[in-house]
Amino acid sequence: PKWLQQGVMEWNKKSLILENGSKCIAAATSPSAVRGLSVNLLMCVDGSTEITIRNKKTGEIRQIPIEALETYDDMNDWQVLTDYGWSDFEGLKITTSEHKLLVKTEANELRCSLSHRIMTPRGWVEARKLKPTDKCKTIHGLCSVISITLIEGHTKLYDLVGVERGSRYYTNDIVSHNCDEFAHLGPNLADEF
Image (cartoon, rainbow, N blue to C red):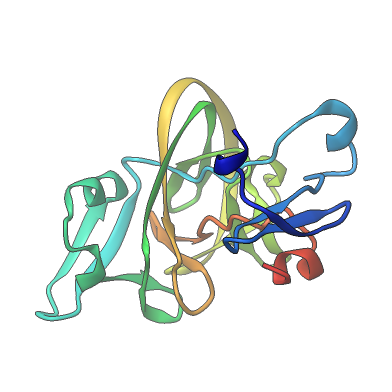
């Protein structure tokens, strides 16, 4: 019905803005996405992935599986360990996937989505694009990638959102990028929002 529709204040081929301030965008996630109707979602890490958190009030430090944060009512009281030190974060994102990757390094392993980004000397690299010749940045320095294995089967995946100071944190001691709703967009379009 007409009374439920928000008025469109501005529109063009890439976006529209409604009178309530909501914004909608349309953008391809890759050059072939428009033709194939594909979607690029950043889904992140398996629930058993260890992260290190610190209580801002008491200073208590815990190493926990990321899925344990589902039970925390007071997430704002905690910070996560990053390669820059302790950083605040806004919350936890949970999604599902039909497959994930097992990335093994000489010191660690990480179960994550295919598009999960990991820090390497050549910058942020999606897990599916890692090569056995790559090195991952870890809490102990650079570690060589040994293998990358596809794991089939329905699974829950987790990620911290809104990690301050660089949008990154340690996952099983590997530097990972946290979810970014606009990561697949060009920098100019993402900056508009």
